[in-house]
Each structure stands twice: as C-alpha cells, then as structure tokens.
Length: 224
Image 1 (cartoon, one colour):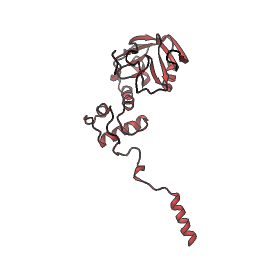
Image 2: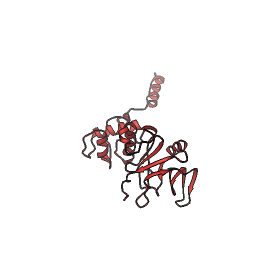
Image 3: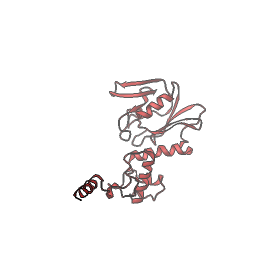
Image 4: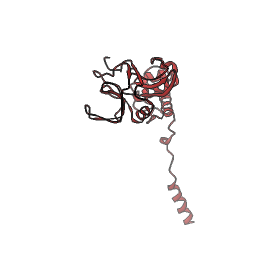
C-alpha cells in the first residue's frame, strides 16, 4: 500500500498543472498596455468600429490577423510593424490597391513611399509579393520617378555610412535596393530602399541589370 501511495504522489508531480494563463494563443483575452499608435488604421482595415480605443474584440481581431500573417508577438497591439505588414498583405490580395504603379509589358519594381512597401509586377501580374521597406529619412529622401538598375553587388559595404548593404541593386547614384538587419519600422535610410535580408535576397535573384523601377509618394514624416 505504501508503494502505491508513493507512486501516485510521484505521478502527480510529473503532470504539469493547467493554469488560466496557458490559454490558447488565439483566445479572446484583453490586451495589455492599451491602444498602440495605429489603432484607428487597423480598425478600418478590419472593419471594426473606428474609435481609436482598444476593446476586447479589437484585440482578438488584431491578434487573429497577426497569427495569420505570422507576426510575432501576436499580442493584439496595433503597432506600426503590424500595420505595415497588414498593408502589404492587403496590396497582395487586392489588385485595385496596386493602381499607383504603372502597368507595363515588362517587369516593374514598384516602390510606394507613402505606404512604405515594395512589390514587382509584369503587366498586371504580381511576380514579387509586397513587402515592407524603409526609405530615405527627411532631407535624404529616396528619389522618385522612373529609375533603372545599373549595378548589382551581392556583398556591398557602404564606405559613407559604414554599414553592410547585402544584395545591393543600385538605381540612382548611391541609392540602392538592399537588405538590412536594422529596424525597418523606425527612422529612415540615407536614401536607399531597405528591406529584410531574406526579401532582398529573393529580389536580387529576380531582378536583372537594366530592370525598371517606379518610385512615387511621400514617406510619412518627410518633406518630399
């Protein structure tokens, strides 16, 4: 009997207890910290009541969207990072949202400064899905209009800014499309179009010297 009692006690220690905090990631629990700066924008995107105040329903809807897009942490907060990734997904799914970029029979890399996203299309066909980017900060804005890739360098290093520019594709003077490990959702570049290194690698493999870019809009917080 003593052996049986001791065995049951050991078994109870081996099985972890289930607490309320261990609820599934998609549970509709209130978010902590209140609304983030892009609360209204995400409410509009999700067709929620637009009041700029975070409700339990807002939190749950934003969290489900973050989970679908693979955004971590999926905490239901309306951050700039979440908003930009949601915008990129919207442009991917809705051809009407791509109307700012000219339609040509050849491949065009579209850089939308206002929404801070990039995609590539041939005619109306999307050949590189929209990704978030970081363009030139105030006073060092990315140059707008039609551009052309004139030089590619997989392992470029900037002697001006002393930073690595992996998968660099130059289109206007020292301005280039390239990867960065810096935060894409703060500040701005020195004029280049920055993106995640993985995205830059895929774009480098797709584009060729002589390919055309079209850049338009105004980066938020800049004068031009």
